[in-house]
Length: 292
Image (cartoon, rainbow, N blue to C red; front, side, top):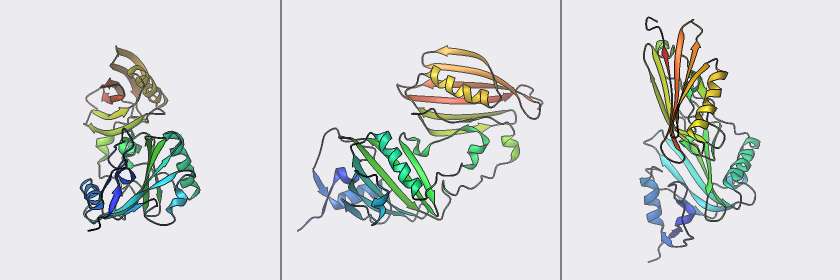
């Protein structure tokens, strides 16, 4: 019986964030590749896998010149945001950052635009990157979203381009969350990551007299350098820097500000380095007069 096959290296490296340590041309059954994709959240309907070309004709015009299209697949998640889309994987001799910038230019020229700020970003705090990944970008046009990621491969770099078509709420059509004004009465700055760094998982909380934002930062910078960078954004937002304490893997910078309502705020910016490039960063602002 004839068995259809697909190259693992053609369709799996970027979705599963796996980069092979050595070249592997082992063939696997197409049915296995389809099942792996389905269980990784790429659809409750059978994906259609292509080899050596984009799943939809014409999308190759958005791939950088000189890149080799390895293949791709289509997916459909009817049970999750009614999303349909496809992913294409390509290889290039360029470095990952160069490959991403070349791809970014192509999408801008084709009329794609960056996503609008999410509603929560206008309220301050640490701004999360898409998927928290380095060398990644996202674009919007009409009801479509594109996620692009470049990463180092065995020879040069790999490029993953994911198109999604959805009419549901997305990063391209964000909806304002139903939050009462009292919850956000304490304004904190918007913190954006340094060049070459990325913010992943993030969150926050508030009470009647305090507000906090925290995030996971991926950066090769030291905690002292990270705090210095974000402290500059604090100063730009009208905060006065006070004292810095800590050394090595934990650094804290305190600051003070009088807000538009005349209330005195005390702030603490903290970076805790978990390993070489992983940091937990946080900022907490507290009303000094609890009667406010």
